[in-house]
Amino acid sequence: MLAEYGPWIVAWCFFALGCGGLIKGALGVGTPLLTVPMMALVLPPQMAIAIMAIPVVVANLWQFAQAERSTAVIARFWPTFIAILIGTWIGVKILSVIDEKTLLVLVGIAVITFALLQGSRFRLHLPDRLVKPAGIFFGGASGLIGGVSSFFGPMLITYLISIRGLAKNQFVSSISFLYVSAVVPWAITLYWFGILDDRLLLYSTFATLPVTLGLLAGQRVRGHISEARFQYLIIGILIVSGISMLWRAYH
Image 1 (cartoon, helix red, strand yellow):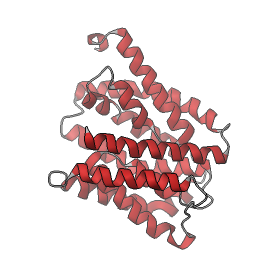
Image 2: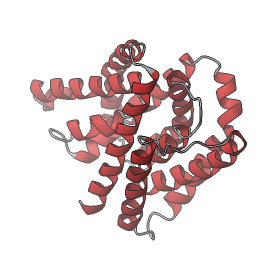
Image 3: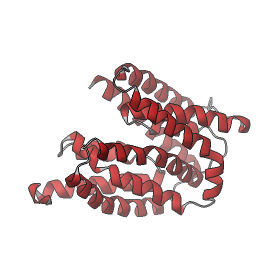
Image 4: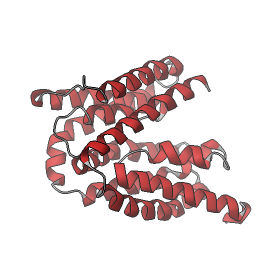
């Protein structure tokens, strides 16, 4: 069935998916942000997005299943999880009436500004008493923005890197748990509206293999990344996310 595409296109997509898995394994974020633009060089953009449906679900479920103290993660972040679901539903409902360009510009600028602030000596930290209330706010905002534009990650990353003492492995397990509440409904929606048809569903299932291989390699890489460097890499991902939102707004 893949014969309709040349071997070089298939090889490039395999490489792009592997790279996405690698960054996901190492940092817990960044898979669609890296993989979709790479695949969109040789495939229609909508097809590149649809192919990511199954791999992102599997990757996040895998990482959360591998997490230590996963019950503690659930206990700490379940309000954020619920807020994402509600925000996504609202975002999808208002998709036809909201000004997506203005939303992406405002949020993109805010995300970049916050990322630069977190990389400076003026870094912000959430007091422990505000972690759960802030999670409801950021979760709802993530769902709302994601429901409109598919950009679920920036607000969740912003929230988690503001929590004092959240180590790299805790960050990965937490973001994976929260992503599940976003990517599972997203994948179902793609299938429901026919964007992810039976042919692309098969391609997406095949795409899980290179992503998983990259994920396993990335987990090994994470073990060699210091906590300080991990934080700066996450801030870099956040800046790229903000730039991507601005690019999307004007293209």
